[in-house]
Image (cartoon, rainbow, N blue to C red):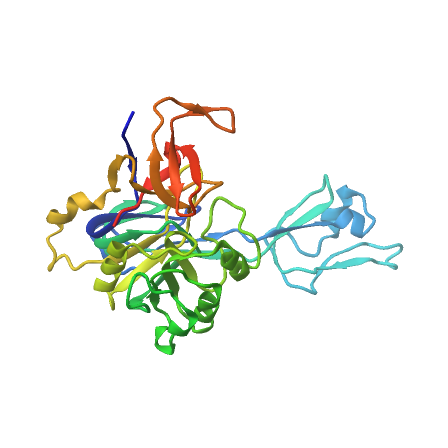
Length: 378
C-alpha cells in the first residue's frame, strides 16, 4: 500500500462547536434550552460528599462495640466541631468516666453497634460547571448537565497541562518562529490567554504564573522544562488536573518547534477576543486534545461556508508527508513519512500492525504503527 489516511489536529477559523458540560454526580441544572450563556456562566452545580473520617470509639474508650451507641453524646445527623465531646463512658459508680473529644468537624454519618465505629463526614465540596463556550443551550440533561452550541474559531493542541481558563487573546510573539522568551510576559497580560511562537522555556511559564496570566500557548517546549515547572516527572496518560496556577498548551510537539503558520495566523487574527482554553490531554485510549475556543459573531460570519473545515484534518499519508507521533515512546516527535511498508509488522508488544517509517530531523528513522501518527496541518 503506497498511501493511507490519518486524521490531524483541528485548526479552523469557523465551525459549529458543541460543548457537553456535565456534573460528576447528580445535581442542579441552572439553565434551559434556548438560553444564551457566556463562557464563564455557571450552567450546573452540585456538591461532592466530604471526606469520611472513621473513629473506632470501642478502642478509644475501651468499650464493647455494642456499648458505644449508649455512650454517644451526639447522634447520627448531628453537627460536630473540633473539640466537641463526642462520647463519654458511664464510669464506675459514676466516677472515672472517659470521654472522646472530636479531632475533626462534620456531620455524624453512622454509629455502629457491631464495629463500635463512628463515621464523621466532612464538609461537602461545591462543584460548578461553566458553559465554556459562549453560545446557546441546545439540550438539557436533567440533573446532569447541558450541551452548549456555538460558532467558534477552534484550535487543538498536541499537549497541555492545567484545566479550563478564560481570558482575552494577547499576542506575545510577532512571528510563529519567534521563541517565546520570558521577557515577552508583561504586566498587562494578567488574566489573558497569551500566544507565543516557537519554543517556550520553563522560565516563561514561571514568569507568567507570577504575572497572573491565565494561559500560555506556543509551538513547543522541552520535556525537561515541563518537569521543572511541575516539580515532578509527568508519568500519567491524562492531564488537566494540575494546580500550578496556569494552563499551558503546546500546539506542535516537544523541542525546538515553531507553531504552525496557519495556527499562529488564526490566533493573531482573533487577538483581543475572549477565549476559553482547556489543557486536558489524554494520549492513550480515547485521545483527548487540549482546546482553544474563540466565539465567532454569527451575525458577521457565514458559518455555512466554513462547515466543512470543522472536522479533523483528514488527509493522505504518503512519502514526504509531515507527521507527528502521538503516542509513547516517541510522543511529540515530528518528521516526514519515509516509507509505508505494505505488510503488517510484529511490534515490540508482540502484536501485528501496519506501520510506517518516520524520518526525523536528526536523521534517525523510526518505525511506528500508522495509528500512532497524525498529519500536521497548516
